[in-house]
Structure formats: structure tokens, C-alpha cells
Image (cartoon, rainbow, N blue to C red; front, side, top):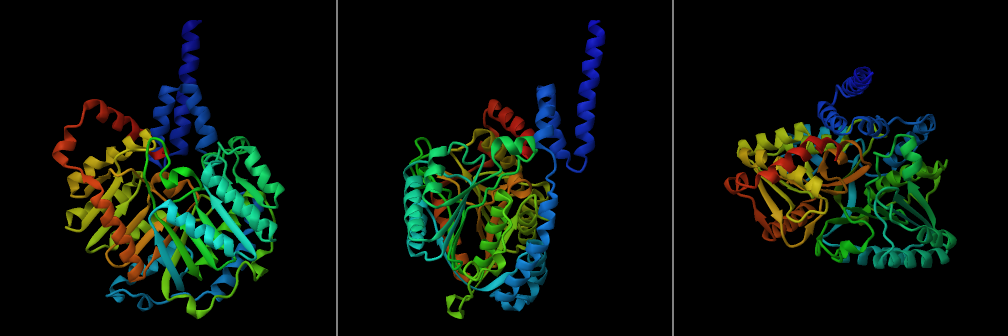
Length: 481
């Protein structure tokens, strides 16, 4: 009888393992990670796989809304000033980079707009100050999306200013993520709703767990005011972004303020997320107050908004990062709190470094998440061996997500340089092509280098065995992080 039970359990285990292998044959790294979990927790692991690893599938209603989205896109394409020729970009050798130009247009899905003005901020204090200033000026609407919203001092300030604008008749929508804001109390949301602020939770925990969508999180940070001014970057709503985290201390982050036609696309992304969260059917493309005409005097900077997520075709952010790194001739400078690259991006970075291109990477010294930090360090050795220079930020915690490639483009947004941001999360980045904007991101990177310590390969190889073991375990799980 005992042998029979053991045989049944073994057959069940083999069935579970075979199922994972069959469903994940296109993603061998995911298969390895899930098989490792299954080996450690035979029944629980397969249950988690069933609910968390299922490929995102759009609902019939979402597919029916695709036509409406196409109409919105066509309308905005006609309203914005879009760059159609590589020679319109301020590149020193535009024709020589035509392949990159075409890759960004096709892979990013959204256009490169040429009528913009940008400001780059390096911390939460300056970012919040400007956000509050723009909120105070709002006359028609405020749309705010944040992965994390906290009921702390900064969260209370946001609540107060939003309620004040709601009393003035401004239409306000607040979108927050069901996992990122899991600690947000109901009383916080209830007080906003009672004050006239529309609130929506993107994929709440319990319903989306049963629908097998809990793994897909809205990691975007967007604010749009009156359709004219937009914010995007890495900063959520919480005290830690002004340096009040009890363990991490100073918080280094990067955020953008945008004016001009790029705001159309921030708005469009927000509205699509809002419709996904609320299932509202809205004829918003026809609302001129949400998409006002922009005047020529707003600016001349070229900016491309790139949104990615499991509900979109392709992997726009991953593919754009790969295309830019592949095109580099002089430098690739990356800042990211989590570095878990895809095999393709790892290869292009290593090949670039071996060919003499200046590839630099800034990661945290003090982590906010130890498992992801060990996974990040597991890639450091092979990067160092190939000639990539790696620094660890020591002034506090670095949460900034930025990329500078030659003098061609600077990227700032919500996406980390990891597999979750590339393939699972709803993310948004801004590509900036203006020399002044690139210089500002470069300036912040060089300052961060001064606040960091460079890893030495020989010393890094001598790290304790227990750390290497932790890195190895985290590396196996890295496709799921």
C-alpha cells in the first residue's frame, strides 16, 4: 500500500513537471525557475504556477475595445507633430542611425513627437513640489496613476490637495495597483471618494488571483493635468521618496515633467489603464478637454512615450532597450535598482564592452529587496568579466531607472532593467532625443558615480561562499522576480 501511494505521488509529480515543461518550452528560464519551486514544494508549487504563471489573455470585451483604441490613436496621430524621417532628429549622423530610428518607431508602437519641453528631477522633494504646483493650477482634470500610494505624510498631502481641487469642480481620477498599494487603508480611499475623487484599484488581490492575473502589475507612475502637463518616472506616492525610509535613508530617483504632444500619449495610456481597471466604456477621444490642441511655442524637443505590458503586442520596452544598446558606438550608461537582464540584453551589453564601448552600470549597495538584490549580484560577475564596469550606490538607496546611449537618446521611466518589467508588468518609459535632456540625465549619472563604489572583479570573486550560494538560488528564481 505504501509503495502504491509513493507511485501515485511520483506520477503526480511527473505530471506536474511535464505540464510546466510543455507550457514553458518557449521560455526555458521560466521552466527552470518553476521546476525548482515545484521540487521544493511539490503541490504548492504547481498551484502557484497555475494561478501566477498563466499567460495573460485579453478578454473579449478588451478585444472589442481595440477598435475604439485605434480610433483614439488615429485622432492623436493627426493632432500631434510626429517625426517621420530620421533627419528630423538632432543626431550628429542621422542617416547612419536610420535602423535605430525605424526600430524605435516600429517597436515602440507610439510616435516620436517633436513638439515638447522636458524637465528632469533627481529626487522626490523636487518632484512632489512641481506636482503640487501643477495640481494647484488644474482647471479641468487631474489623472494620477501610481503603483504605490501610502497613507503617510506625503499620501495625506496628496489627498488634501486632490480633495481641494475636487471641491473646486476639477475632475480627478486616482488609479493605484492592488499589490503595490496593498497596505493602503480603505478609509483613505473612502475619504477621497466621498470628496468627489474617482478611485480605482488595478487588479485587486483576491479577484485577480482567481482570474490568474495577479502576476501582472501596473507599475506605471503617471500624472496628467488638463492634458497639457504630464509626469512620468520612478517616483510613487510615499514618504520613502523624500528620504524617510527608516532603513534605506536617502532615496535617489528620477522623474520627468513633460509638456507638449508627448502628454497625449501619457493620457492615452492612463485612460486605457483606467478602462481596464473600471471596465468603463468611455468616449474619451472626443473630449477636447482631455486632449487639447498644443501650440507651437510649447517646445521643440523630440520625445517618444513607450508603453509595454502583457495586454500589448510585443515587448516594446525590452525591444527598444535592445535596439539602442545594439546601436551604441561610444557608451551605454545604465542606472537600475534591479538588474536581471534577458539573455539578449545581457549578450549585447557584454559584446559592447568587449568591443571597447564604455558600458557602465549603477546598482544599489543597500537593497530594498534582498532576493532581487542577490539575483542582481549574480549577474555582476559575468558583466565584470566581459568589461562592463559596475558601481554600487552608497549614499542611500538608488531607485532611478535611466539609460544613456551615446549622444542619441536618454531614457527615463518606470521600467527596471529586469525580466518582470520587460515581460510581465505594465510599464512606461520616455525616450528623450534632445541634447539638453540627454546632458541632464548624463549629469545625474556622473553625480551618482561619485556617490558610488566601483566593484573590482578580483575582490568580488573572493566574496563569501554563502553569498555565492544565495546568489545562485536567487539566479534560478530570477525569471520570476
